[in-house]
Image (cartoon, rainbow, N blue to C red; front, top):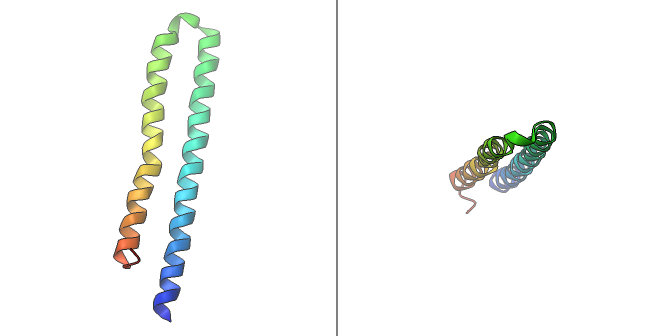
Amino acid sequence: MESSIAIAAALVGVGVMLGLAALGAALGDGLVTGKMVEGISRQPEAKSTLFMNTLISVGLIESMPIIALVVALIILFAIKVL
């Protein structure tokens, strides 16, 4: 009985963790992209620099859900769900 409760709690925790990581990445991507558009509208000549910095930033932001997925898999394998 305790094992099934632990498994259910781990699954709920993993789901919440992955959901929040995806939400954080979506908000971060939106903010970075919005600021890029704002910067391009203020200084159109800096478009290439802003675009390159935006791609780097979005790539780093998108690593957060991937890291959360790895941690989730570690948790699930640690309690032998998978």
